[in-house]
Image (tube, one colour):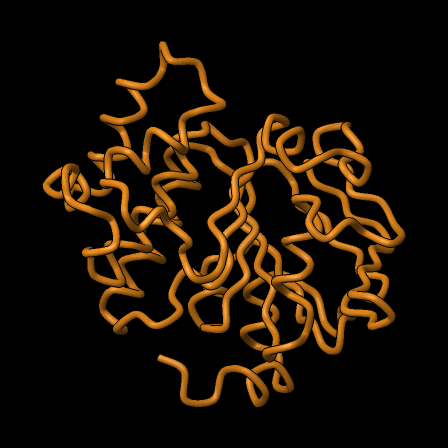
Length: 236
């Protein structure tokens, strides 16, 4: 489904991503883990066209994305819930969900709204509330729900558990698993909570200084002594 080959991304003269190869098959959850500054978020942003890759190929369902603009990439079937949620704070929950549905056919709206409200009942209860007044966990649920309203084939998630209490983070990871298993949405997940990310992932990559340092199945990386020492000590 997604094949990224020799991807390079620069910010001016600074190389942030240095020749990364990543594969994701239809129906999979693939996780990227690594320290701050490893290039994880830049990698996701480059898939969406901002920033543009300086070299390499991003092939999605047979379409080369590297020369497309962001709105064209979204229309291929990719939705992105970025780090920091970035919801429309002054809009209501329902208005945020309508924004997510803008590229989908209006005939699907009621069905899709019912589906995300079933998945996120708190959002149903708060549909007329301004998004900026929601709790952190509710805002993260809204960010994911808004992305799902676009009916994506591939969902990109950047640090969905960031800043959340452990019990809320576990709920978010459970929701991600459900999105994948019951809706068939493939997921590319960037997450600093390596324990939960690797537990979800079919395959995973460790990024270090803009390069892939280790790759394997989620189970293999969970069992890898070096990965455990670097990323899993003290994880819950």
